[in-house]
Length: 181
Image (cartoon, rainbow, N blue to C red; front, side, top):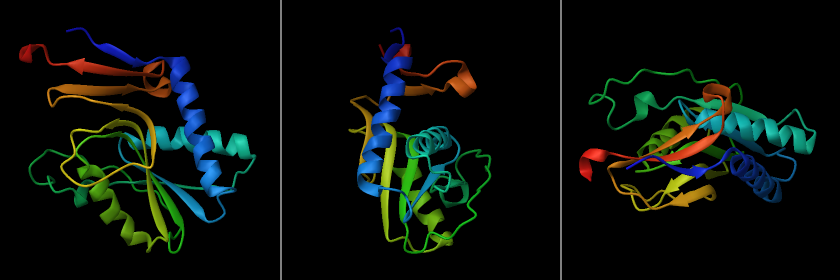
């Protein structure tokens, strides 16, 4: 089966803006909130959200970081994982943390992110934002508060997020493994 386009570039932009406005409704000026993107793919969404929030709010002081979860993953020894860089130059103690990833699938990356995040303090609250929620694939009881799009998929399908910064245009695709047809 051919790849199915889930989000066009125009819908992608609208989705990013909607997510930012939802954050503003809850976090106001972000004086007590921080944004943390999960490496490797969540940072694309986190960067875009951070940039858009700074433009909308005209506030360059929104705290932003990137968190590597490699050594906190439960499959660390089973996979050939390459660590990424953690860049968080602030303490999250008593802050509201918006943890961001691109696709929520099994929940294992988010669990690893929660564990890794604790090295930077104990947050007041943690909220999860994802661009795509594959809602029927969870292995852990993880749920996002902010969701770009929710889709129902089977295990053999894959969600591919393309970013204009890396791929030339913003798209979200659903790919099907033809061997399972």
